[in-house]
Image 1 (cartoon, rainbow, N blue to C red):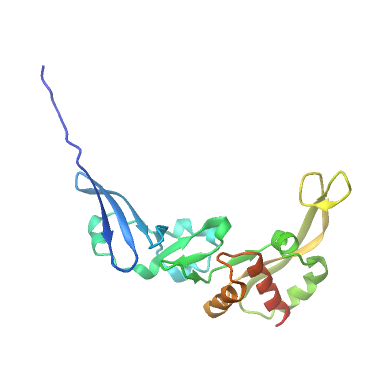
Image 2: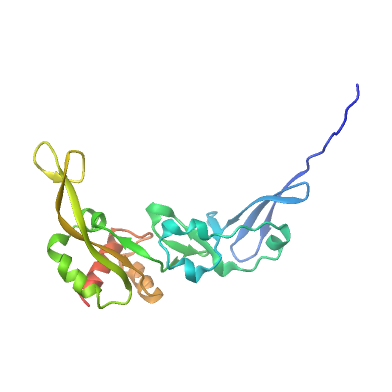
Length: 210
């Protein structure tokens, strides 16, 4: 029997501790970087963005294509770009955060669903008033009146559930980008840990009271 072309696959796994609450789990195969994960002190995965300032101008759902991939192990050993390490929690969390988990002000979309179901306000009456106020605010990136659809259940009650779908009128859809100062104030006032119903109402009230 003759054994030919035998190859030894050497796998190494280890952790880099940057001594600031950030660690990096690394896997090397035959001396080359195969995978890595940045983690914060809460063991939550962090992502490296190419430009945090540009990233904040996008909605969280558009963030993934703007992430940066490290390909050299030496770049991980020498890593110091912690300001561009971010956490984004997706649809439930609705926020971008830095590696210390402080919320970063970023573009938020407030739709008719937010306003009518979660916000518990009658936007059909407030639509024109809100649009007029939004036009004067530089932190409201976009505001428009959009169709508001609902459905009728068997018992005749209006809802957003199953049933025949109707256009019930119009509502407001907003894109807002608060200053970091206002964003911090919003979370302080609402005591929310993510972009919640309370945050939506805080923004609506800020618009109404302008």
